[in-house]
Length: 326
Figure (cartoon, helix red, strand yellow):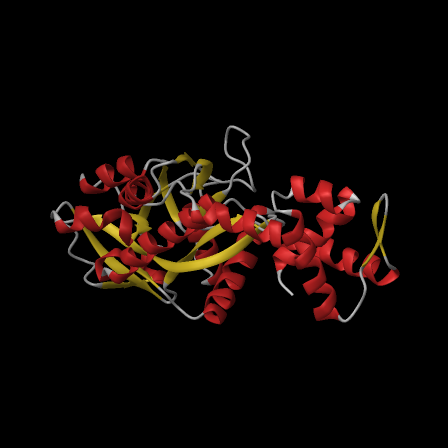
């Protein structure tokens, strides 16, 4: 028994005539009759009753027809789904990005997707709040450090991002590492609420029972770094956001200890069973870019076991909730 025989059998039942079915199925009537007889012989059952007006199914034929129709529907559905992957994916994909992601990560993702998926129109917007962009459009994907509770997306933790103490190059008191307790003595320039970096740093201060001295609130990382370079204050930023400035001798960094400040970067995507193949392929490219960055030790990103990620996120999430309700 094969799919072709089942298709011929269902076609004959729908046409109620071997002659009509042969024309609809584009097969000679003798060949069609032979296919039906072969199916009956293989099953050991009479499937059709022939009469002057055409044919009708036997009781066994009706049962075979029910199963055959279900199988043919499943096969057709499988072919349609696989054809989406076999052909070049196209369409529009909306991706939301955390504002504190390094510019080079976003540009690398855009460049990689343009190169490998030229027919996909990828739109990237800043910020992520629940499942929509700032303009209110439904997002297909998101890269975010804090997805929030009740988000109807699948969370995929990718890497941990380390935040460090950043000062001007003339700073002599801090070398290599700084304890969080001593960090809290410095006048800091940080983003304002509700920026996630601010939330995260304040959560760490709460966990360590220290109060921060925040002298300026500025949301732009570029402006913060320029003020720090001029000696106006110190800051706490991701390594990835300052590594080029440190390499160029404009800024100086020190790793923070007790505790280390490490946040998780998540990729979020729809939990729906049927997703456009373009979204899956863009996820693959995003994952590739992020892991390539993690392989560069100067980037401050690294992979850790999933259980460790959830434990760390749980402590910070509880502290952030406490801050939000103050």
